[in-house]
Amino acid sequence: MTQRTLSFLKGHGTENDFVIVPDPDNAVELPASAVARLCDRRAGIGADGVLHVVRSAAHPEAAHLADEAEWFMDYRNSDGSIAEMCGNGVRVFARYLQYAGHVEPGDLAIATRGGIKRVHLDKTGDVTVSMGRAALPEGEVTVSVGSRSWPARNVNMGNPHAVAFVESLDDAGTLYTAPPFSPESAYPTGVNVEFVVDRGPRHVAMRVHERGSGETRSCGTGACAVAVATIRRDGVDPAVTGAPVTYTVDLPGGTLLITEHPDGQIDMTGPAVIVATGEFDEAWLTETAFA
Image 1: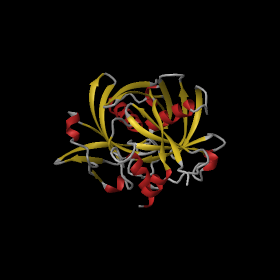
Image 2: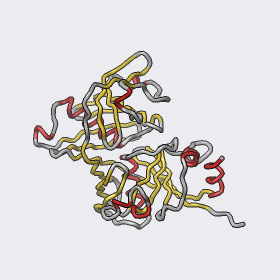
Image 3: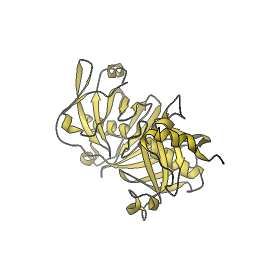
Image 4: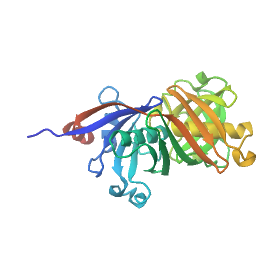
């Protein structure tokens, strides 16, 4: 019997790393257990998540977007759960499409569960993603670490975020587990929690616990949420001033530039790198998925 292998790639954006599974026809089954094993840093390939690359027309969740975007980012967290969006993932996804010869440098559209994302892909270096507009749900939110609690800004970037300003990034603790939040009704499906400190004028640093993945080296939607929360705190809302504003956001894995425009559109600019290609045994994946 011939052993069948499936191709994968490894990529990262500001050290938020991903296993990329090319599957244009949506023929590869990826149950949560298989995704978790792929992302396992000892028993698998290792990553913060999986970028399942599918043509929009071939995926039931994206077929209605096929006229606007040929490719769908079927994103999974490292525990196998499905996520609406991943900002660093979109940049790496776009870089993969270029690497594989599916697109040329320039402007393209990518379908996600968080809607269509517009991307500008340089030949090398940075990728800029139009992340859409932030939603700012009403109501007070609190996040906690141990016995300490902080007020947090509720920001939705297609996925939910709670942004807390702290005196030191050490205040976030180990971030091994999800920081508790209240009220529970604010985030019925869980939340990404960002802890933020000031570094200088229009310059902040952050750590993040990503829902379903734990602490990661970077989170693109989290950086956008942090910028939006900081812009509101600093009183420079572009919708009010009429001028775009850019904040530098430092993350453990690198730096992102986040720009909010007067119409509310948010651009995120940062690197995206393909670092390796390989193959895994389909039998291993099947055994893992149904063990």
